[in-house]
Image (cartoon, rainbow, N blue to C red):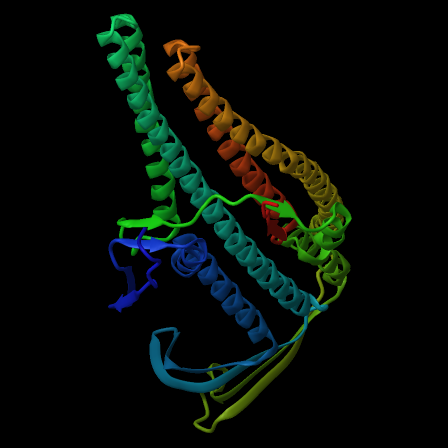
Length: 422
């Protein structure tokens, strides 16, 4: 078995390339996927976009200044004249009934939501990597189990041929093992395809820069839960990014609703101009023009009232979604935790069954050699052993797969211990 080689990342023209023929551990694949996954890169860009938008909203607190220059053409009766205009213009938003402040607060909360969404997406990428990684390992172990069965079946076929030569077995007895060989090879072919699909799934998560020639390395573990259900449920509110996102959306809607009544207030702007103004074409001296403008909308066709009603309804919707998210998360966590406890015990049972099947096969083989069992008994014992091995692998993987579902629900990794045989 080749030793685990340290992963080398080669950066060429800002592209990370993984060297060929590498055997990667779970943690190495996770690190690579999180750093190179295209969906995560898009989420990071979306956060930068939201931060830039918040900066744009803050610009409403600053005055806007511009230089205006150009000819002004006047025509009176049959006389046309042109004057050069040049002046400095400044506009300052003094009061909007706190709407600008609310706009900034809502934009900042949106940034937090996107950051929380990025953490959630990173965590889910890691979980998807783990699921595909262990699916790859489980199919590899099944292939190994089938290869062992192929070897046993070939040994049995040779035993039958020797008996056939002595007239103690028929051609049909030998053909039965040949048919078993064909079935096993067909199953191996299927498993190889499943394993390759899992590896290709890992390539997809690791981004386009990954070379396809790599193999996950490790073994399918037999693990136990370390913590109680109550310990998991206590951390859901503080750790689940989905719950945090729902809470932030509720907070954003509440801020908008509280500020909705500000739409009833007037808007106040300060405007000033200095220079060669259009109203001062008769004079060559610069002039100043300033205005403090108050705009109070007395009737908007019930737009303001409808906006307030809309925001109140949004607050109720987001609060209900937030409470439902907590309830759904806790319920799903409890269901998956109980499944894990059941699977934990089943793994023990299936490993015991594998040991018993191995002993049963050895006993049948011994009795066959002594003439107490026939070829059909030998084939049945080998098939029982293969089934027991496959079931032990399936339940180990089922435990890991359910653990990943629980981790996705509660938003944190589930602590486990590797089971040690007494």
